[in-house]
Length: 297
Image (cartoon, one colour):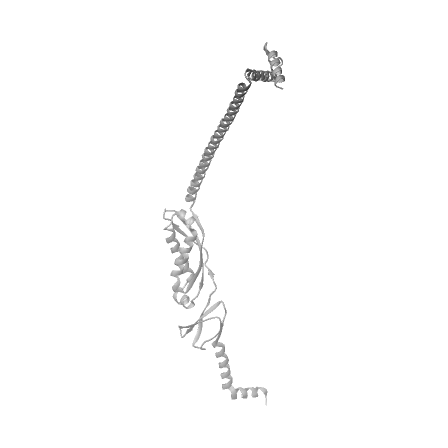
């Protein structure tokens, strides 16, 4: 019997079993879904939302249920956006922003919004314009962190119905038009010149104060030295007076002779002095002094 006939007779007798086996294999294949860790599957049954499949092995009803959307739950970054805004002091600025988000409820994202990226971009632009409109230019530059927090909180509130979690919102740069930049540069240069003048004036004032303190200190030291000298002279006078009281006229003559000798020594020690003129009684003064010294010894 030919082989072809045997095969045809086998399939003819077991066609139902073969079809049943194929149907079971296809059903199992269609009913089992393996979901990656980074995704969620949205399942529809006859066009309506049935369930959301999480990571791992999941089972659905074959031929009735169908995976309609495969949504990534990884964090996403929107492309950097630049929008114009006007501050409360009527300065036009260009704000560059970037937003990070992730989908946490895919059934809301796929059924409530068509283009989630465009929707978030529009929402962020409106919030940024609104917040900057309440600030002056200096506040925008100085309170960037506060502005970022306000944008993130408001974006999170408005996109909650879309099943999205805003993880970060960043303001990358705040740019000014050319005319405003030129005006700010002129103002900055004027402020720097003013500070330089103030610093120079303060330096001069400080120098005058230090010089006055130095002069006052010198005067105090000179007065103190004069007082010491006066005290020394008074003490010497007192000593001489005591000596005169005790030794009489001889002590006074002794002091006068010593003064004469000292005066002659100073006269001879002068610079450029070649000739020393002595008074007539100079030698007598020396003789008297030596006699007194010898007598006191």
